[in-house]
Image (cartoon, rainbow, N blue to C red; front, side, top):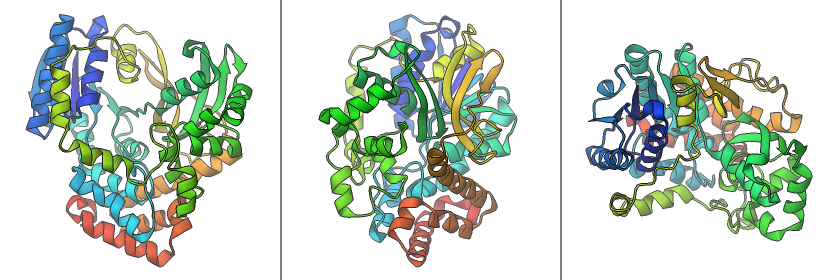
Amino acid sequence: MKFAFIGAGSFGFTRDLVRDILSYPAFQDATLALMDIDPERLTFITKAVHKIIDKGHYGAKVISTTDRKEALKDADGVICTILEGGVEVWKHDILIPKKYGVDTNVGDTRGPSGIFRFLRTVNPFLDIAEDIHQLCPKAVFLNYTNPMAMLVRAVQGEYPDMTITGLCHSVQGTAAMLARWIGAPIDEISYTCAGINHQAFYIKYLWNGKDAYPLIHKAVTERKEIYNEEIVRNEMYLALDYYPTESSGHNSEYNAWFRKRPDLIEKYCTHGTGWNPGVYAYILNEYTKMENSWRAEINEWLNGEAELQRGEEYAAYIFNAILGDGEMFKFNGNVRNYHYIDNLPYGACVEVPVLASKHGLEPMAVGSLPPQLALLSGTSSQIEEMVVEGSRRGDKKMIYQAICYDPLTAAVLSLDEIRKMVDEMFEQNKKYLRQFH
């Protein structure tokens, strides 16, 4: 087997996914092709992969290259973790909207920040997909790069026969959080989760086959420390009756309820005790700090003990189900909506249960979402469809029109203010937006 890591310099992701893949006997003599455009990061991750191989006494081979075609040629599995541009590029996704009054926490998924991240990233992403189509057309393509739904949807539209899905750890991460809140072992929990990426909901959440929502409700309403852990998400649950998958910080960006006024940001987004309650520019500030510290942190890991125990990310389990010993694996993945969710746009990218097996990837139909969820996720989904199509056509006005309907943007700005903001963001990013030239 050959696995290609595109954007391998994403150190944490690549290191952990290599560890997970090599934990399966079927892959312990695989070829691991590490590709990145940054030679320094590529050198670091190559050292890390060799450390894992040595610690596990695996027979795996390593290719370390800046040539994407070399990495992809004859690959059986591909993992993408690219980031188009460093902090100096994407910081403007946060700063420009803020100047106009749109306060952003992360900005990697939707809203004006996520949309312009997509418009920059879709070009290299489609280039990667074209190389896969030419060099390894039967490969299983797993994407971790955001904005997940729009990027995967763009590829699904251009290469309908490609085996591709997008993966996000928020589904299993939130499921474990809810289990902790109600005192349940995670292996006794089952659930059905559906919607769109970063805006999916647990339609069912069961403990040993029984509805656990009454216990979740009791924890949220009666235990202050639980409420304070995820203030935004808990408020959404209390209003919408179903629990969302993504962090409070992310969720605060995706609707009109929490970030349109400073007093609301102060009340809901600054005092949560979870990992990301929703403060302004959270990820930008974290990345800015890491600009001067990432080398030291990587060297600290390289000088320590390598952990070989398999983690919880989906990728290795999926590869094993399709390419390895065939143990079937159910997960939540991003796929085109061919009647999987009845009341979200047909053909859009949705996040639903998917079964990985020797037969490939088989998405599962979940029927209709409750109307209050379909209205929220459906708005975002239709915006994403407009953005993907606007990028495909090179139509700047369609991008502007899509951003006009973004819930937070529309709650804060007039149409003219949105136009000026979008024009400034196009100008800032023109170097990366060849589809509009």
